[in-house]
Image (cartoon, rainbow, N blue to C red):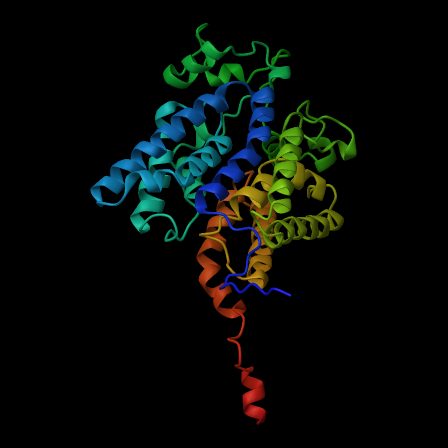
Length: 361
């Protein structure tokens, strides 16, 4: 029998950073195509703006720091950060806001801390929060799914909207949000939150046209298909061992538990678990954002706690906070807690017993 010795870590699948980042991008690609199918060309244009800005910003700062540029850019971490921001922002967001957000993600959140591996916070989520706090009106101007739009946008119209604020016919985002029957359509999360503040019950709030019907009538048209495709991409990452199961399971499980408790307590006011899972950015957050290996917990027990806490904060902020979606806020809150979580969940050094055992000797 021949024995093979290897040094730790003992991983059967060994990949460098570039390979991991590319696999994550490949897993996102089908969902991005579905998102474009339902919401138009905006995502493609925003992705081009964000990726270009990210690469230029990273290259410029690395050159100023006299660090190797080509090697850093070839790890695709800047590209992934840019794409995560692009899929999170409205497709019609003005180009200069996308540029500012991407610059903040790469230049401030990532490179200011020392580059990849040293940033405490998730760069894409900090950039999203910066944009949301700075430009709240623009960041909530999501266009309705193409099937509901009175005037679906062509590629040229979308380019014109992003770079000038108007389509070729002179329509702005607010006018484009008005569907064929004259109703201004909101996202599923916005529709429910607004309905509840106006005194409607949850079951009345989900009667909006944005919901497909079926499965408790809580799946937003277009949004649920996008969420399901991100779920499929996340399962691919799990199967290929790019990510561990602990954070997604902890996050989704926590949302299900918290939302179920609230929904049972008052079904007229609190949304169902199904609504929380398939509307908004929960699934992309669970598989593609919270699992960031740099800003997430590094122990298995810590990852479960980290994911569960994000799920808890997501339900709390969505339900009682001022913003309809909360993945970015929940992730950033828990990024701050990662050192504490890792400290209390780190495994004992081999050969050292617990403190209680030492006292008992």
